[in-house]
Length: 128
Length: 189
Image (tube, rainbow over all chains, first blue to last red; front, side, top):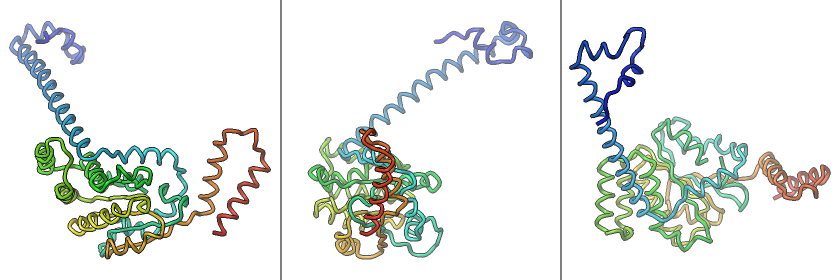
């Protein structure tokens, strides 16, 4: 149980409109009990939320590790670090890419597979 | 390209996943590991509904920590993809995958894309696997040749020359020669 201190109340309210915390307590002692209860229940609620969240995160992490030992996003980070921004932008402007990715906004049939081919080292991996 | 799709993903309720085929890593890049890696990214990035989440938990408990068998993995992959609005699966350097993995990926992902029309598959590799890919996915394929542009080659060379670990061995004339000759030679191929 955290005691409701005068400091907590005075810091939450504008001092010019509320002259003194002691006055609030004196005028309405019932209200001060309600505030104390609310703050205490909020504390325990927050603790429970943290516990639930970390429980889900743990379980999710276990499921992720169980699904595959591979970590392709790590490779992606290293590719991104080595990439030159301007290289490969032309590809994003091609009709083929725009149609396939839905950027052109058409309603017609879109082939689901896009295959980019080229010799080793031409920059297929590094297309922005 | 993957980052470009990621950038747009926030706007369009899209989930983007990627795989990199790598010949030296071929022994761990098995079909279940690769398909599992797709599912892993979908679960991690997509807005997974509760019924998919429950199916995953039940499967994990059912297998007692052992890896999923391929049919169960495919089923979960289909369920997960069907629950998402839009999925882009990008596979880089498919030519570096062992033939069995290539065929498996093409076959299984084709089936998944047919069941969930909002799935898009991006593949890259050398052109000698083109006919295999055409056969594998059977229809609905667009091909784009990747040819290095002059500007791209120059930008790449600049980057490499700037990171030269022996800058004293370089002068402006040599640098200009390297740039000129390399761009000329690569333009001939």
